[in-house]
Image 1 (cartoon, rainbow, N blue to C red):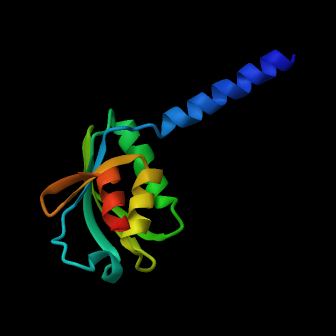
Image 2: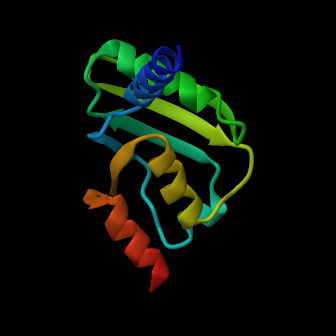
Length: 128
């Protein structure tokens, strides 16, 4: 009985990790960003790309809408591999918050002002 219970728990853990295991998500911030952008703005015109299917995109948007720090989240357009989203934060945050935010949501890299950077590169940039 203990083995069956352990196997069942292990299966559900693996299944739940698989729900959010997008490893190739890219967050593109469509707004022109200047120094201090994250500390002064709460509105993000963004696109997210790299989804495996439309259902993955829908699940991702639902997790964004469920985030307690996001006041509103509107999907402008969506297809099987990407979606354009406008979301409004309840308050401003620093760059480190958004790096952590990206990591929690399975985003692997960000495109800002046409430059693509991985989360690791951005983390090293905040430590300097």
